[in-house]
Image 1 (cartoon, helix red, strand yellow):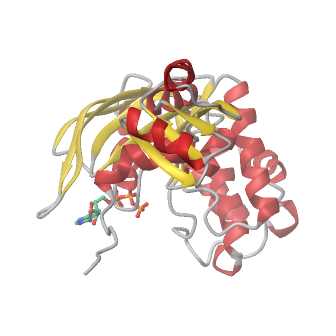
Image 2: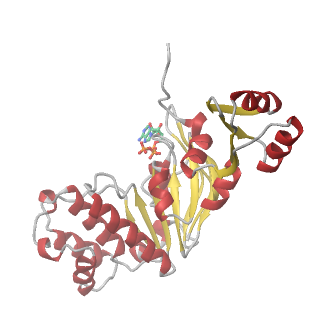
Length: 300
Ligand SMILES: Nc1ncnc2c1ncn2[C@@H]1O[C@H](COP(=O)(O)OP(=O)(O)OP(=O)(O)O)[C@@H](O)[C@H]1O
């Protein structure tokens, strides 16, 4: 379990993380979402004690990461897959980690097996492909059999097999009762694995909710189709927020299907279709972070 309380990080110019308070709970995958530069990596670095918060706290299992006698048994993390000693073999890298945390060295063989790296265990870390380095990083995270796992953009640069493997692994770890915290800037990826999402933009917490709740908060849209354009014109005049999709089709926000149907009845216009749709998670995410994108397109 990870507990963030008013977590803040100010670099000289930028407020990278701005008073974030939330809990990453056991038994579920929590997606950590935000556009580039939102503050995800900085938050994760503070959880691991690699960066000192300007204010607030980041606790793992009730203590700061470094206050645990054997931190790897509490939290396993993959932040930067290439941050390895390039001359050390994969096995030597994991063995050194195990020794420093009082973990029996036979566990090294188990995690190498679990991530499918047994055959290349003797290769120097610097010669591993990105996919293999990711797997090695994950082996390191699993080494202490921790109750909490944290992965920063784990699918970046992986092929489809690698992506599927990460998805299954993350699910399995949460189903075993662990707290799993996974960052991504892609809602579409999170939609497939996360039970819960924490969304940040420009360092500020924008949402901390189940995926279902994020969609519900984004509201629904109602699609209407009528046999003649004149009928759609009439509906458009009677509704506050609409988007014309075609001559005979309209998308309505801020009204329920019942309200649109009643209006059509009052206006005596015939409808061929009236359908309520939930906003997609992608749309919900784009709406949430619309004001937080660092490099928004500039139009002249
Ligand atoms: N060491 C640093 N010195 C100064 N500014 C930094 C430093 N690290 C991060 N920042 C700034 O803090 C903000 C948050 O960066 P961070 O890397 O945490 O975002 P992110 O959400 O992980 O983004 P990405 O998805 O691009 O990795 C950015 O504006 C970034 O430029």
